[in-house]
Image (cartoon, rainbow, N blue to C red; front, side, top):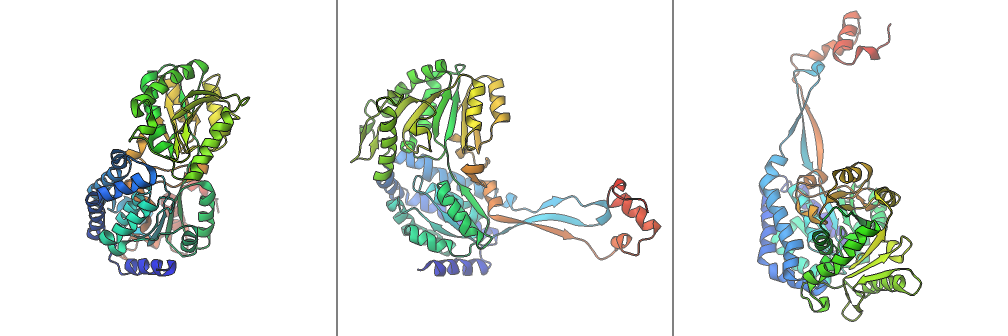
Length: 470
């Protein structure tokens, strides 16, 4: 089916009014939950084929993540949709004012390849819960997952969600259509293309982008525990996570302590030979492998100034890059762009102040992670940095809290979602005012304006100091 026909079909479903009742929304969420549970093995096999994911990781970061989001949404949706009262000025009484949430219409979701189920279906959960229909474009770079979605979504979700397979031409054709909201997850280059296409129809957008998410660590923490958490967040999905720790800042002594513990943490997670571990993933394709491997090779070349701490091995045929840690300086290739692979640079700074300056001189990150037991240090990061999220003591885990908004700021994105925040993203908050025709209390502000009415207006409608004498 062509893009225009797909969008037209989705709009016909929405225009029928079937999506607006709460019962329909709950039915769609329940149907998606059944799909994820009943076809769990099918989806897990697809994720293993695309990314080498272990079934447990697939459940933790994709399938189970989604079923938890669905359960939370089903539990709270009726309350989230209730009208919200607004105060009415004295001059308008008696009257009632409130806001109601109404669905936008047809939502386009464009998903990336690194979490091909979660990052397509999590926005769809919010869009359906808000009463919309969805046209969803999975990534062609995760072909097994895309095929799985195309196979099962129509069976379970019917006309509520339409899956459009394909690559750049199909995405381009979709972006030529008129939608009521576009939700894109990916890189900032394509994000600009999406935003430009949306501007043609004045379509609102949510952009979930990425960037280099920094870690700051000092010597007040348990280094072994911190190393385990940093390694877990970094090397999950072979580092191909938009909120993965991208690099670590710390003073020389702090980084020396961390560098001593990270190799041990990697062994705890993946054994002495991660290439043989079923728990460790692979790069998505040859180009991704080559990009990361070339950056590591350039920074470890003679005279580059970087020092290998752990790892460094790779296998192009298997698209395997060993979990790698190295000391680099700020000019290293690995510091030029988001790494999006299993390589963790350690960058030495002289002080907390230098770390804050280092972060603030760069684009605002999607996430920022701080490992410090010093409350004053935590306060400095809270008050003096800007990021999509700020975590103390743990990376990545904020995504699992459905009441926290997930989204970026500046180059790392715009808009947010998850839980109630998804309902806000995919709804229009419509202002409603109800005032009876009798008694007509507005008569006091109708012209002609005599002395009595002027005094009433000054007293009840606006502060008197705003009115000039005369």
